[in-house]
Image (cartoon, rainbow, N blue to C red; front, top):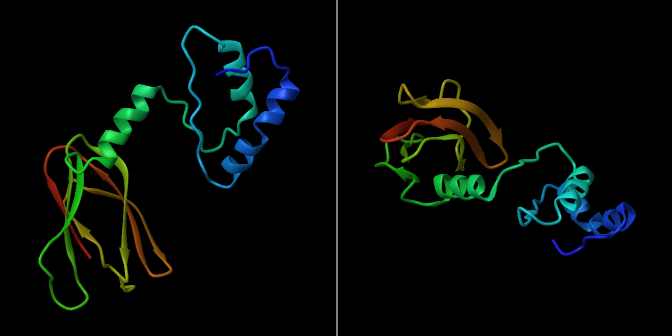
Length: 148
């Protein structure tokens, strides 16, 4: 952070574009040296919207990224095709992840359509244009199965 000494109005003005992006659903990362400009960081934090905000350390963000964006830590594999209109998947999480989102493009709406391994928790399912969106809590350590 290289703007110490600026007034709150100057800070607000310099972050208006960032705030507009945040309100549109984009994200920003603000980092700071731990022993410099802490008051300035607090001023900026006060200007940012609170809804949907994660106040994570760099370590927390890096660990989340590793759990959710490394194929060795999290992966979804399609199993052999089943009867027409049905599909099976194996979901694996090395470390466990809450809120894993799986989108099945082209899935057709059916009642009672989702079956999972007993320890894979379905958090949400929603039919979207073009497919099905599923969110799971996936425990660590072995493959869990999803039948749609």
